[in-house]
Image (cartoon, rainbow, N blue to C red; front, side):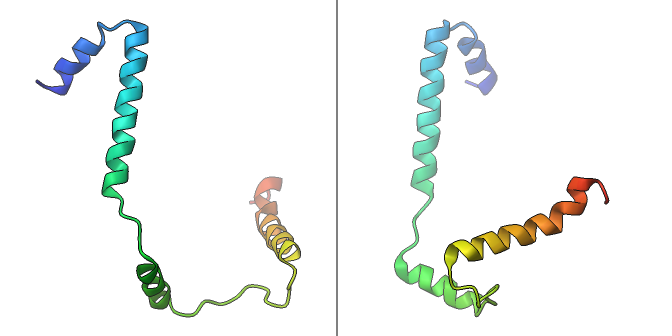
Length: 88
């Protein structure tokens, strides 16, 4: 049976049956995706971080996390302002 054969059968379903089939197909898809995705262990995460090497901290002088986040948002807004204003 081909996908097209199945689709022809699906076209004959009532709306409620189609909804149920759609839900079951999505559940199946989610279940299969979860089975193929293997969560990394703590040791694997540490190994990945070590491979990355050192990173440059942005604005390390700002100690307050809220202030730091606001500063990063402002930098991004300043960077994008010419596009918002239509200057670019």
